[in-house]
Amino acid sequence: MLNGISESGSDVVGSFISQLQAFQNRVKELEAENSKLSSQISKCCCHKTEEMQNGSDVESFKQGVESQRKNAGGDKTRKKKTIERNPGYDLKIMTHHSKRYVALRVMYFGQRFYGFASEAQMDPTVESEIFKALEKTRLLVGDRKESQYSRCGRTDKGVSSVGQVIALFLRSNLKETDGNHKISGELIPEAQIEGEIDYVRVLNRVLPSDIRILGWSPVSIDFSARFSCLAREYKYFFWRGNLNLSAMENAGKKFLGEHDFRNFCKMDAANVHNYRRRITQFEISSSNMSFEGGQLCAIKVKGSAFLWHQVRCMVAVLFMIGQGLESVDVIDILLDIEKTPRKPQYAMAPETPLILQSCEFEDVKFICSSDSGQALRIHLENEGRAYQLQSAIFQEAALSCLPLAKDQSLFNDGTIKKVTSHISLLCRPTEPSYEERRGKLNSRR
Image (cartoon, rainbow, N blue to C red):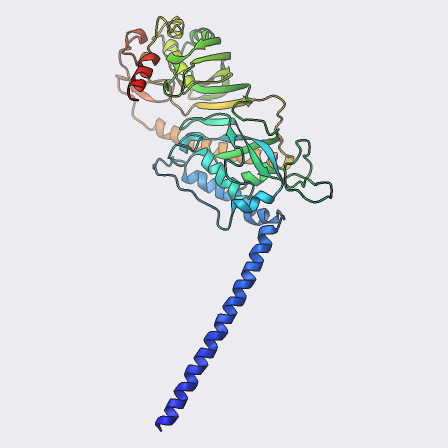
């Protein structure tokens, strides 16, 4: 009896051992097959994967609109940046692809971003979102340093742009061949355009709804989005209200030419030692938009380069002149650093109405296919309508409010402020001069 039970138990154990060995063998076979497939995928130059990754235009558009709705109130939660990689995406694998040096023209609505550049430890930034899209679409070749990335400007938190420019190496569909007609996987000549990846379409499919690529251009490898830029143009929108536009324009003309703008910027004495900048164009114009009888206007400033917060400081002083609080001559006094070596303390103009309008380069023409251009126009029109609906809601809310108190007035920038006595700029406390800041920095060393 006991012998029978023992033999039966031995048979069961033997069966389990046999099945376990079979499972182990099968696992090894699957691992070998998986390794083989992974190797084939890494060598595949086919760009069809980007179509599978991107999905349909309609679905991406819906996701973009939904994202914009979620961010309408502004995501102001500060958080440390985290590096996110697309699953299965290895930058090293992409280095064997053909590549070309490309300039991209970028627009973005800056309200929810902590500026353009991703160097500060805050998210989200426009730059971080662009690089997420580049990785998701498998366009990035190597890391940021290897791609020779450059940007034209570093717009601040809340500032928008319709003409920012960046440059970097991107993957190319075109195949450069050597003498034996073998793919070399190196640089694609600038002149070749036909058959290239539609960078505008591919990137706009995955970018957030408040960032769009407006065009791309092949550029030479010595091109720098920052140092090759010939001129930058900014626009600042404002409601006219009771502002004296003639006085503001006369004052603004004094900015033309080369001047030391240390009294019209946020001074960075540790890194910036030359505060002379050249302004080539200044004008104030009215638009065809109005609200409750108020006329929307814009200040346009063009120059070769600008200092930190320069435009917003210039606009702040112009607003004081337009309100009759300062004389037109205060511009001359503030530009004379011998008479006024220290900047008077004053608040900058708000950041939201400021946009980087354009960046000019020599012999750079941005390309956008007809299909991509049509999709871009539809997207921007839809976004505009969405914001107009929000404006209508705010207008209804304003109409239902109680009348303003006697000690309040509605200023041109759209914010309600208490009327206070104005202190002349030349009578205000001043910030340390450049020399004083440098002396303090040197004493710490």
